Image 1 (cartoon, rainbow, N blue to C red):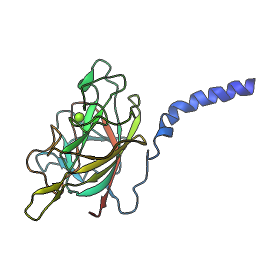
Image 2: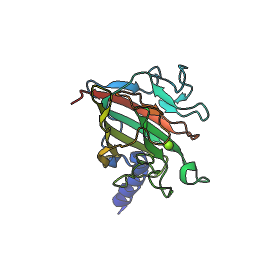
Image 3: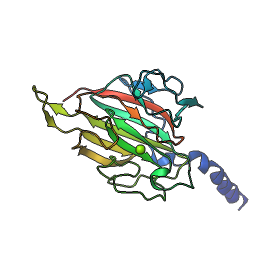
Length: 231
Ligand code: MG
């Protein structure tokens, strides 16, 4: 009996440490061969502020890149075509806010196509606006939402749009998103040039990764990208 009680007490002590890790096979995944590490816990030199060449103004704290509200989005210096991207993010609880006012950010593919980052746990919002949505376009196929103040993973496979010799777009970009180990978009065509708040203008063949400042103290870590050969 005492043993069983001790075992139970031990589990209770351990569970908060494990958190939701069991659901997230790529949590803290090491960059594979061929990956470009975009943020390793310290170095922000692969990024600059969106709209100018200023060094990143966001904070680096305890190995995390933390949004500094009001400074604006950050984008990678390098541009990418087809790729596999791994991002981890942590959302603070903003209990007095609701809908898009809760912890909000975003991962923009090619600076244009936002995969929404939002605390959607017990927090309804409008269509194609919740966490994991292709913002303004499509809700996730499945619910991979976890409570705030836990680490999330996004594993994104992006296929750039294709163009003919005259520059006319012949194929839409396609995206597959795995959120916390659950596939939430499966090779989905994105039929717009940007998702509402992405970079404007004609679609390019390559573009940067962009992280959104939406006024909340979102933390990011372990960001890496594997450029893929166009097929
Ligand atoms: Mg957002």
